[in-house]
Amino acid sequence: MAVKIRLARRGRKKAAQFDIVVADSRAPRDGRFIEKIGTYNPQTNPATINFDGEKAFDWIMKGAQPTDTVRAMLSYRGVLYRKHLQLGVIKGAISQETADQRYTEWKDQKDAKIEGKRTTLGTAKEDARQQRLAAETKVKEARSETQRAKLAAIEAANAPAPAPVAEAEPEAEAATTEAEAPADATTEEAGA
Image 1 (cartoon, rainbow, N blue to C red):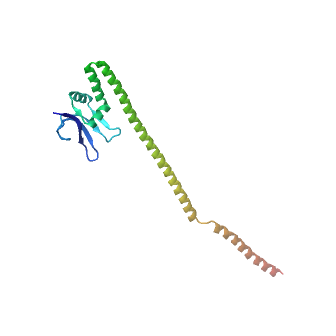
Image 2: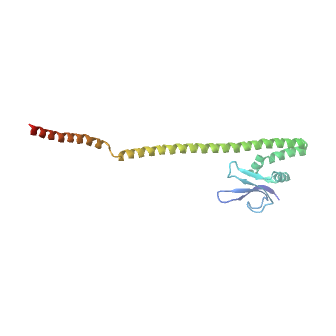
Image 3: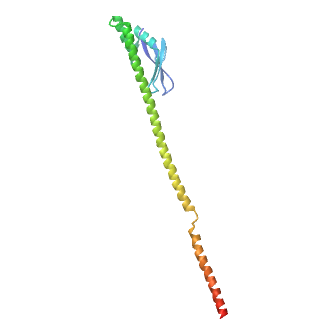
């Protein structure tokens, strides 16, 4: 029986998630499996890979063949590097302590690199959000300024004109002066 470590699809349409399973190579993709060792979610950035490294390592050492995608994940998480070191121990090239030390150093560096990527993506996302917010604020201020200018123009056009009232007053003064003048002329004629 040929044993494979492969992905079994689950999740709804266009939102796939996968189980990492150990299965007989003749079994259907989403069918029977021997053991589920983890999950893989490609929808996140970076992709979420959760699996039991010890179980994966045991199956690899027993001869289970990973598919190409699972091989990339195992390499990414260091299971294949650990297998390489363990084969060196079996052949007597290095000691178990040296292999464990090398694997621990590699794992620490890899975890720091993954966390750095996650942090960089988070800060880039936050910076992009801040830039969008600033651009929206500028557009909002420009719109409000345009609205204020339009309202000021409408109010100026609809306001009553004070100029006709000012013109009516000098005419009224001239009319009173003319009315007084004939009265004075009549008194002078009467007195003569």
